Image (cartoon, rainbow, N blue to C red; front, top):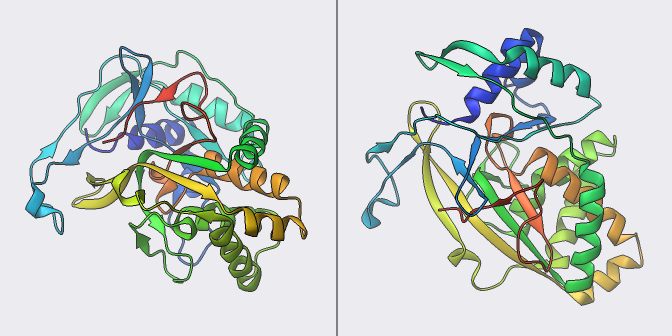
Length: 295
């Protein structure tokens, strides 16, 4: 088994073949308004750990990795997340597809059997509002890359993968999806707001020490991705400046809702870029469970 998000995608399309078009690559289109994750296991401490294959690399092989693939074997109980925009998909349709997609079927050349134990529907807006309020109170936000992420450079037209966790690379996709969904996207508006976020949040000098380069096998060759977490700190000067122009709590809440629902970076529809977000607390915000440390 390689990247386990393929199982989630297979279940959805098996239950509703018309959903295949939602996942098809379309050059030049806005980011897909759907996001899946790999499977998550729960360790003995009740913490979620992302399950996926990766390539082990030596210290001298970080520039290019072609080492041994660490496969995963699936057996037992797992969790996964599925986020989407209700302007494109209806909740009832997705739930019906998951229900019909479960069962025994061929996957990755093997016969697998999947049963759904429970489905929890979360309200990202309510969660994001609490996070935004606390971010403004504490002056700190922690973004955990719960599944491997390939961030996006906001100033390159193509879907250029960025592996430096700057504020702009982290927020470029959530901002893009937010503006597109509201019918407000234009490059000038996007550029103005991504620069605003760059000013409002500061990366610490330890930012490269809290993320890890992980080579993940999705198709045929290893892809470099980021795991770990990023701490960002609020720049009070710029926060006060922009608060004179707009409601920053409402703005950050909406942006956070897009990040936790649709993920960050590129490849979100295939399982990359799932994030947990917290502000000034001991652990990431997540439904029922907290993520484990990402390696």
